[in-house]
Amino acid sequence: MGINRREFLRLAGLSTLLGLGGKTAFELLAPGQLEAQQYVPEPGAFKAKRWAMVVDMRKLDEKTAHKCINACHLTHNVPDIANPVNPAAAVSPEEQVRFRIKWLWKEDFHNAFPGDEHDNLQEKLHHMKFLVLCNHCDNPPCVRVCPTKATFRRPDGMVMMDMHRCIGCRYCMAACPFGARSFNWRDPRPYIKEVNLNYPTREIGVVEKCTFCDERLSKGQMPACVEASGGALIFGDLGDPKSKVRDQLRTYFTLRRKAHLGTYPQVYYIV
Amino acid sequence: MDHNGNYKNEFGWFADKPKVPKKLFNFKAVFIGVVIFVVLVTSPLWKNLGQIIPGPDPQLNTAAIMKLPEKDRTCVESKEYMRANHMLLLGEWRDEVVRDANRDYVNSKGKKYLASLSNNCMECHSNKSQFCDQCHNYVAVVPNCWGCHWEKEKEKKQVAQSEAK
Image (cartoon, rainbow over all chains, first blue to last red; front, side):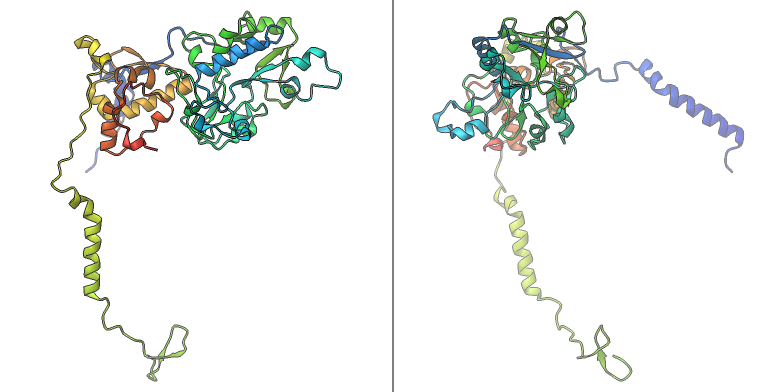
């Protein structure tokens, strides 16, 4: 003989109560049973709604540009394929171009802003070397095509690379209209003269690019290039109306690279 | 065989009387084959029979660890936890740091550590070939950390066989 109706309802009610309140009761009665492991940002980390950079070409001369590039490449162990540590690892001139790893580099006006040039361009633009890098687009095509989500857009607008997940398919390189991504055709280590032991290198077969120095920002430091630029590069939060980048964008006319493509690049140029 | 005493094949055509093989298999040949197969497959066992292969013996006596006072000589979690789960913990660190920018790890006792392989683990365990490679070689696993991350080992005693390229 089974249980009667009254008994069944009583049991059902009790088990519902236990199910709802059981976990809370356990935590109250036996604290410390749960693991307290958690992850937090570093204490002095910079936070932003939307990171962006302004490149002030009026202040950026050739020497400063080199300083910025060197600072970036030293910080991130970016290999110089043209100048291997051991001469035996040298590659042919064509391969030097093809294998080149670019995080931050110089470009002529007609290469940096194709379509914006014309026959009778302002004289100074012919001589300017624009400092170009990953634009950390608001609508990043590289992120859309990545099959493993190795490249992704952080909530603060940074387009990040997760080297652990990169399978080296190079879709992102095809998608990026700025050529800001480079593939490691070779093991990069033999091409790094001075190494920064606090930052990893990359491996053969992964794509890399500028990361807006996320590892420095999380320690409360400005990006390496910004620090080395002496004010020619301005970095900050677009979401903060009082920030220096917003101030620059409000005051001066700025250009963006290939804005017509709709990727919403977030590196602005004052010419 | 039909009622006329004729054999037919599967299509209904006249055919010869089906041949019945005398033996299903040649027992002698098969037996020798099986013996050779078993010996070959188990040969690594026979080869190492009687040999004593020393187990891994990772050392914790690096300069950085010895400098610490006795009671502070603990890893980010207990020894038992780390032994069983260090690979899972490192994987978790990797995801938290790269994808969520959470660079600090608060352990189960509430103490905070920098979640970094090269900049935290390897600072104490600066004897990678001794500390990491021994066990990894012993159990034949090939972690691919070191293609990118610096091992920060001053004098390398042996190259990890699992990573020899």
